[in-house]
Each structure stands twice: as structure tokens, then as C-alpha cells.
Image (cartoon, rainbow, N blue to C red):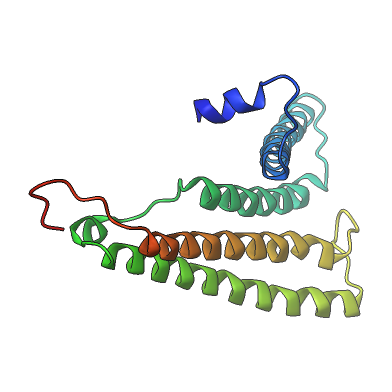
Amino acid sequence: MNEERETRQQPGRRASSGEIIDRLENSVLVWTILGLALIGFVQVFCRYLFNYSFTWYEELGRYLAVFIAFLGAAIGVKSGSHFSMNLVLGHLRRPWQELLQAGVAGLCALFFLVVAFATARVVLRLHGFGNTSPSLGLPMYLVYLPILLFSLLIAGRYLAQGKSALDELRRPVATAPGDTR
């Protein structure tokens, strides 16, 4: 992590597209959470001080919470910070570790591709119907679009993890004297 920060701070060095996307993802997540918190604070403030409540806040809060959850999940896949159980993996030897990691990543990618496919059907149907949200008046297909996009992003990241695990199989194993692996 420190190496990543150091490479970003080198003068004259251009940021890679991956670094730009990382910064964009993190910035959007932070600003969305802060915006949701600010709107929530204003809602509570107005409700208790002026006895006035915004009708659109609850709806917007739900949509932003889903957006935050899926964007956060995509960032979690990228950084490897999701909860995982490594008991079996820790007892396996090479090549079984890499094969299990690739298999799990493939299953996770498949799950999110199914979610993306199902969401795409919903988005297309909602676009055809022309439904809008009750309070905000947003087209409902726009509300479901982040689920589709982030599911595809998550699936792509899991596929990349699976490929990385399979690439590990091709690397020669450096063994120390007396190592039985």
C-alpha cells in the first residue's frame, strides 16, 4: 500500500488507467456516503426543528444505499477485503490451492453474471414500461442500472482473480532444502 502511494507521488509520472479508476471509485464511494449522511442530517434537523419532512429522502436513501453496497462490494473484491474462510485452503498444497482459488473465483464470477443477466432483464423491462419512482420521478430503469454495472464489474474482477490463480500454476516453485512440497 505504501509503495502504491509512493508511486502516485513521484513528480512527472502519469497515473495509469487503473490508478485513475481506483481513485474515481474511492472518491465516488466517499462522496456518496457523505452526501447520504448530509441529507440524513438535514432531514432529521428539519423534522425536529421545523416539523417538516422531505418526502423524497427515504426513497433516495434506499437507492443510494444499494449504490453504495454494490460499489463497496466491487472495491472489496478488488482489494481482497471480503470475508473468506481459508481453513481448507491453508491445508492444501500446490497446485490444489491455486485450483481451489480459481474455482471459487469462477463460481463467484458466475453468480454475479447471473445477477447481471437477471438485472439486465429487469432494466430492459422497466425501460419499456416507462415506470418512474414515486417521490423523485426518476425512471426506474436508472435506479436498477448500478446493480447491473457493478455486478458486471464484480464478475470481471473475480474472473481476473481466477486467471491470476491459474497463472500461479505456471510459475515454478522455489523449494528450500528439506521442503517436501
